[in-house]
Image (tube, rainbow, N blue to C red; front, side, top):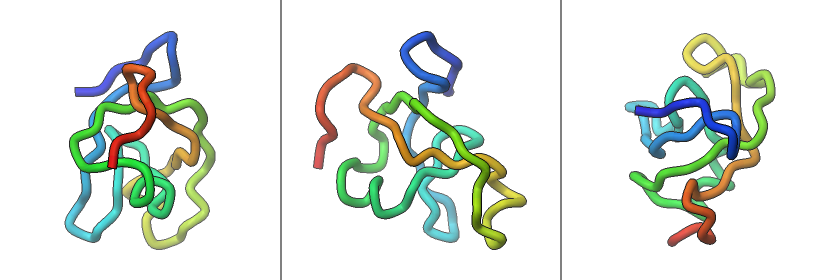
Length: 78
């Protein structure tokens, strides 16, 4: 389960829903950034949140993160 932290806005595990969206807790993750730099199950720390610009996924994920990193401070794993 994720939680709010001092290191970032939210920490949790990268998951993928039935529609192929990457998410962490209640937040949608940028697909291209996640696909290129992370893997399912990575524990991340979300640094910034924006309103989700997608009409398709907004109802399920009203907020989206485009800036996050591994929670332990390491570089993203592939």
